[in-house]
Image (tube, rainbow, N blue to C red; front, side, top):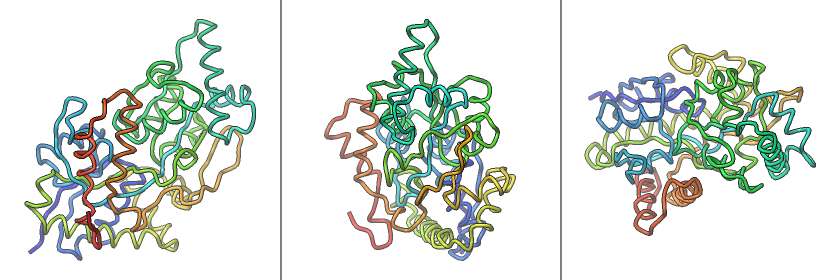
Length: 348
């Protein structure tokens, strides 16, 4: 019997395994009729999963934990039987702001401490001149992107939301927000940094791997009770995604991989923008050559195991961002969102 599953996703490179599970036939081979629905914001994904308009969703790991804890005004308990990637984000600023940072930098801008100190100098100069504070965006308040921004700023004593204004801008809107001057910079997943650079409005400052390797990012989220209530559906979709992982990790498949993602109902972006990202060859902008970043984004099976320890970094990020005051009970609940027992070969 074929099971129909409706899965929501956001247009990012890290939705790849869900897309490949459908488009390369892995879901069908597992007895699934997979319907993919492109969404416009992470809050839409969370809310539609909560009211069962979606069976499962491509989701920010921190958003799944926040919803489970009821932080941010919405309580929607979720469970994660597997992740969808590690790493894959970058911090991009407008070309003008990058040029200012480069002039203020005392050392190599590739060093995250050097760039953070240059940013602190810019913030101080603007304050002394009576100019408004800079504005940086992340794709959602509860996201690795927010916490990576906080970690970067902390290297020079800056606080996101205090020294620099903070906004939430969904990934597909980041390029327009930078173009219009609504924001001075953003942290988002691929390919939106590359899109900003290619449009001539952005310059990449750092990849997420410059700040933290093997950073938890997107997951496949279900309603918490579905893991026990619908075990066959969970098992089949997990198997299809693991088959997609094996396919995605074969370099020979990258041209076809990029074509799948470029489709109008997927990312709706040119293949020649997406393919270099899949080769980990990142455009930087501001007159600099592309940069090869080893394992910029991970889709391998080891990266997909849901690790309860990732919840510890997420909670630390929430605390640094002023979103929570951590308690032992909160830590236990957060770690329980990640369910390695449901991962093939996994255990608690």
